[in-house]
Image (cartoon, rainbow, N blue to C red; front, side, top):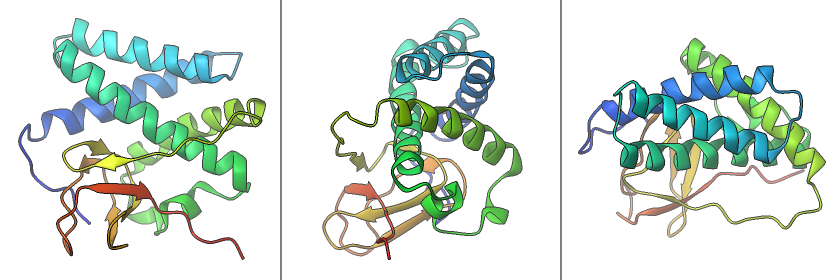
Length: 175
């Protein structure tokens, strides 16, 4: 699925990708790989985006929440399954923008370490909603099971099959 144009246009998509780059850079320099370090990195990325006038504080909070959700979800998957990130995405990584792929995998690997350290915590249910921004991967409609494939950062559209607005990250059944 290609990103769907929605109100807000490209600005939140570019902000998400810039914030992802900043989180990646910060996590690479951090010794302790914890969820607190991830949160701190996202907070610093939000502050920087506002400071530079790229987006408003409200936009930064919303996009930061999307970014944290995606990274935590990928990190949890990697920690729980031990599989490659490309399995989480459910499509050929050659279709993903190279710069975005590098930033996301580096940040997700750091997040995986945090999840391995905190594996005893209860699993959380991750919901994705129409209008939110997400990164590469596959979402599944909670109502009808339709799959939405994102090859780049994009806005989540209503389900093309049933028009519902709630999705979950698709998890391939374990064999």
